[in-house]
Image (cartoon, rainbow, N blue to C red):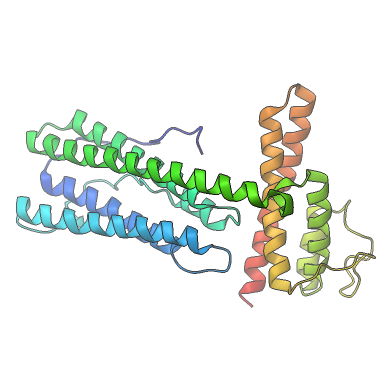
Length: 297
């Protein structure tokens, strides 16, 4: 995500009027409020501290919607109106980025604040394009105000990001010895295998087939037998806890292999790490699909 440009598209034509500008800004703020709000919804996977960040972000965007409505009513005699849009507003809070953090079992407040800071930085870049293209002086002036607001918000969210980083670093230092975070990739692979085998006992035959296809070389020969655990004692804990742990470990392994590929000293090591990362990412996606399917039954 960090390697992609902030803005993947630019305004196709100049914003011609204040009513059009407010319609664009309102649409973007409304979508942001909805997407942040969805991540503020309680789930077993999402920690209360992470949800709290998205509650703050959603409330901020709702306040922005209200301010834009008030300003538009004062300037144009009506609230923001979607019929004034001449092109689909550029998505500043991309659904794919929201999905990435929403699906992650490792997401932290730091990651949420970092994402929010990036979104407001993207908004600043967007409004600078609007300013550069606008011919109407009032459109330029209003877009300048929106750009300044985006810049101020981004600075504020970056401050929250720094505070979250310090808090998480301090907490991690105290928990590292008892956490999977300090485990090697080989140990995590072993622990994940045990979790997958235990999890498989409550899956359908078709879902066990899916698991076997993900990593056939590591699973025991009698894996497809519902009662067979391949001679490995299932981990303690109920099946939901096992499922969450397996997803977390699978994601940790993907991150480890990606980091190894980035820091590899030679071509051979890089290619091996990239291969392991690709396999791990496919496995993670498969496990998430199976988890979603089993939860919907």
